[in-house]
Image (cartoon, rainbow, N blue to C red; front, side):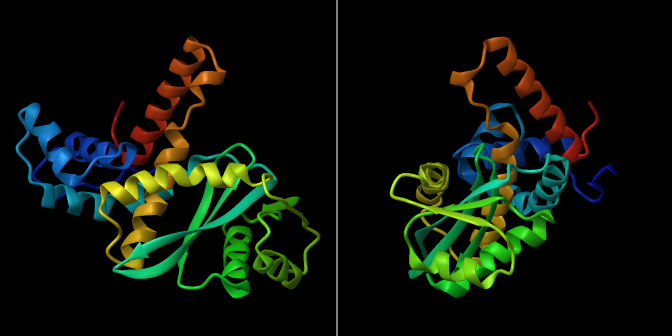
Length: 232
């Protein structure tokens, strides 16, 4: 993997990638990251950190996605209401059966066309056809699935989609911390980058031994450093 170029930036690449990691990994504001760096003697403004995230965040996220294995063949689809710039919008999201965030799509509608757009984007992005779509009872999903000329099973039920419902929690936390999103474009860019970092560092700690947790965490850091272009 070719290293990212940090040429033209005053701060070393290690500081830039650490600031980006802090912002995307934890529920922090740009000012929070500024203070954490200041405590370590690094004097950088929150506006500079914002520019770093805007420039390098999407690039690192793409590289992290390229390093992930193929997702599970069962995909859970759901939508959640978000307020963007004072306007009611919908965030359509998909996760697989193992909790991997597959993609998200900010749209203004909650209808068949919006659901179909998400399904087509997922299939095109991963270049695979899932075995099953799992959704709630919103009729738009069944109507959209009928438009796809593909043999995909469709499961619907009140509690069958808890996997997707639970995955909204980290997004809600970030939405509150950021005092809501300012525009659909900025929400789409941030949530796509946030999903890639979340997938890399999301470890089910209560299901594994401490030694296994430490190994998984070390592998996640190795993946981050490789995607950010930082030498080990």
